[in-house]
Length: 210
Image (cartoon, rainbow, N blue to C red; front, top):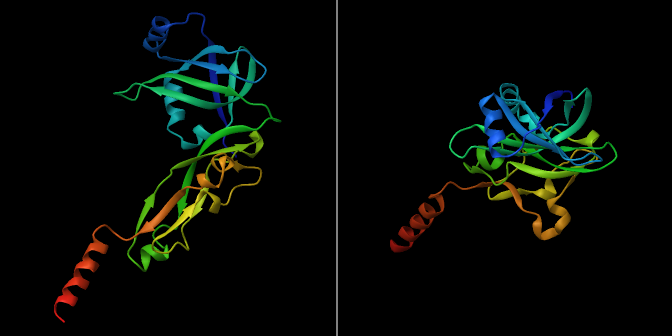
């Protein structure tokens, strides 16, 4: 992970809905920093800077350096609350991390070789994405920016499941820790809608002419 994200935060003295509204009118976003060996700490950050960082997909799955009162704390973005009708961020949660303690983080899936998958290129199939991200468990040093899913050998009517993913060293899928029945499909290649019906209709017409 060669990217570095810094959050310059300030303590929030006033709390409550009214205080949060005043912060947002002043161009800041209220949040909280919790977990680890520290207490839950109400904070705020500059909205303009936070919005810019949120445009980068890597921000959601990276260890963040939080600058607060002259010290640096490491954390991950745990929750983000947006306004229901426009993209304003109402509140965010940051969770402290320790180098020797595993964390659970959702990371995006990057799909490779979709157009050249045999089920697509040779059989005219359509790719269906069932998941766009997965939750992993790892130490902070092993946190990947994303997990790649290679469709280069995927045939028609075939799927790639969670257990098929090639995970970076030191990481594990949280979903699979609950049992084999949670081994859900990540992506599949299926015949286009209507193709099966058209084949069946053709077969019926052929039977009727005999």
